[in-house]
Image (cartoon, rainbow, N blue to C red; front, side, top):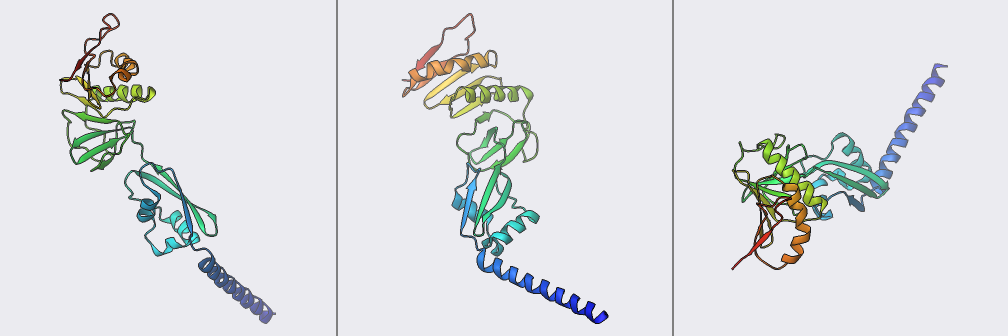
Amino acid sequence: MKRKIRFYILNIILFIVILGVAAFLFIYMCCGVKTREYEGSTIYTDEELSDLLFTEKYDDNVVSSWFMSLFRPKKGIPFVEKVTITPTSLTSLKVTIQEKERYGVVQMSDTEFDYFDSAYKVVECSDHYIAGTPLFMLSSLDKEAKAGEALPTGSANKKIMGVVIKETSDRGIAYDNTVINGDGTIVMHIGGVEIRFGNRTNLKEKIMRLPYILPKLVGMSGILHLEDWTEENTDIVFEKAG
């Protein structure tokens, strides 16, 4: 009886070993990565993502690349919050990129841009500007910012940035940058046009005027004065350059 039990156990072990070897050979020979489909990235090209994410030897195999991503997620990619790798066939992978929120960015210097989320927390410090991100220049900051910390500026500036971001986004207004001076005055630049809003009083209403005015200023340079605009005083002056 013991011999039969031992016989069956040995055969089961042998079967498992053979099955494991066969599975390994199948995965090794038949699951090499031929294609990767990327989605979710607005910053990197597919080629750049391949160079950034797939640098290990095991990344050349669908099964090992997927398996390792479960236990060793891809990290440390600038502006990328999370990477999800999913097999779509024996030889292909789907790579989904979840980017960090880029609610806006403050230009600290010619070579430093601090990106922040809607909670005004710095999510990334970079040496380059990503086109399309609402860009602000502040005359003063309380201290240097670091990723993970609150944007080092007061609530008044944050409220101004929030209004600018929301109102320009809602109306499809693309601008180069917005300057918030130390005295609280606000200046927006769109091409050769400098828009002076004055302080934040009626800022939303002033921005609401822009879709009606800007088409008339295409190709022109100068200063658009909105400092004194109110619901009672609706005069708007454009001071043409030159």
